[in-house]
Image 1 (cartoon, rainbow, N blue to C red):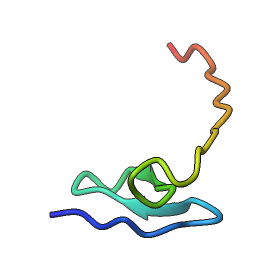
Image 2: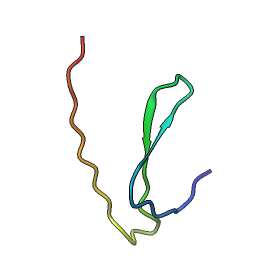
Image 3: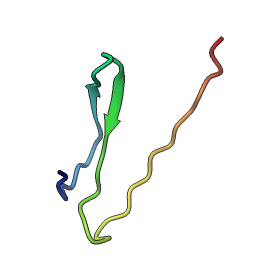
Image 4: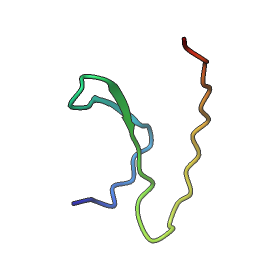
Length: 44
């Protein structure tokens, strides 16, 4: 399922592999628009 919760900041949770995942939503029906800037690093 899902919700339409308006989150002002993202939550960092662990997935089934114990890796960090970001959870973020900006309500529903286009009421708010969110933006997340992501920087990636190449890892060998």
